[in-house]
Image (cartoon, rainbow, N blue to C red):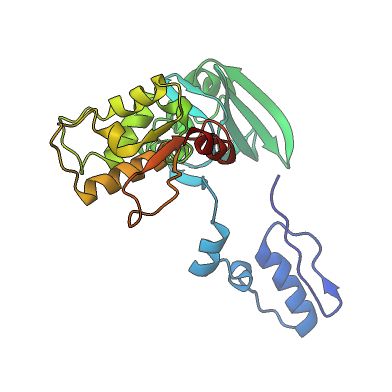
Length: 292
């Protein structure tokens, strides 16, 4: 259950090792006849910021470590974790720690499966014991280990660092969802309010009923609007739009799954036509040509 490292050179091979240092050192000592030990991570380039940054591209979650009184907890998974109260955390949460079990150094793998908290104990990659209960305290009490520390503490679910990472994951997930906003999300108040705060709030008056733009559009049969005409329904009759405000509306509409299908630029025509992407853009464009 651990990564393996192999170093090869000059016809020599380290075989599979549990550390990069051991793999590289064994080959270098064999080839050069020296007793020098080598730092594997340095030779792999992993200690370089540029390498680490490249390796982390596209990674949505990085495991982290939390130091407790007598041990260190390694949090390896926060997937789909949802805290509803102090005793329930969803599922796919996982954290591990090292401690002795029946006199042997062991890995205590803590995880959550729906409504249950589980501890699986490994020795030499083999399962030697498994415990299951409805709370962290009760499942840890069954192990008979680390009695001076509460199970809630050992699971580190409510630790400030864990809660902060959970919040980061939720924010990143929410922003990812915003980037995929479509017509079906227009009635989702949470998504629309967030988009409003990002794109419109600083550029339009508070009195403007911006939600009405989307509600009017949903209710009409055509999936096409002329922007100025459509916006005029929520503004005063003599209101003059500023360029900045119109840009904000364009950005907002694009963020909510709309596309500008105006056949001419503003130097040729001041008419701006938009359509929400219910189907393929190509189909909408054909629909527009018939409508026009």
